[in-house]
Length: 327
Image (cartoon, rainbow, N blue to C red; front, side, top):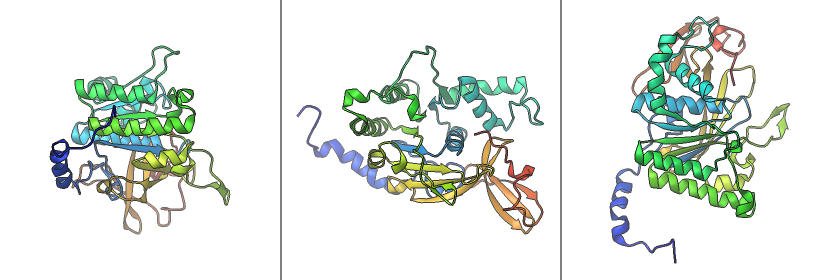
């Protein structure tokens, strides 16, 4: 039958040996021990991200992509119309890399020279796709095909969409939304595997039920067509902020596949508005806290802060907790 083939020994012998040799091999370390326990970014794989607006899901993804570029030299194709125009997107990446703000009133405001020093490196590692014609459209399949082409011609490790709603979706051509996902998501998985790419997709969830005045944490089943997303999904992650005034983000690893990548579970990270990066916290003494920022495996990038006792969980209106979030 056209498009199908019975597997012969020589078709897979080399791959079977590679599969055995890499059976327990994780993806790359992303800068945080907490995340590494549950998730690593593996080429030939896919990750779906969800969370309510202002949850910080895009900022988490952008930081992890930045870390792979700084640590391993990875290159990324980015289509982020949900974030803003190309200037806004690139300014966020430069801010993350330099810890310098584009707000001229900030003490750590970036200079013209610093922008000029960074722009070549940033645009080399982050290929930011933008629309030049307001009428132009692109389907997810066309975007993934573009990523595969760039991989072969220039080199590329990941391609990311934020968000799914901003793509063109020819539902009618496939008989409706559910049957469209039945075709589209396996196609994505195939492109990732065949081209050794990691493909990220950000999808907004439907509103969940409320308990005690707060909405339940969205899961992959809360996406439109949730069962199809979950059936075809490889790694599925929710970023959730229980309190909009808090800089703490819960990261829930709902589905992790293959098993070598990590496991189901959750962790917490905290957002620093000054550096536009996340950090973990470690209590040293009753009034001393360490901020642990992302760093290559085996390296600890920490800053100690002295705070008043009992302020860790009760007072978020101070500089330490960076509560003015930009999401």
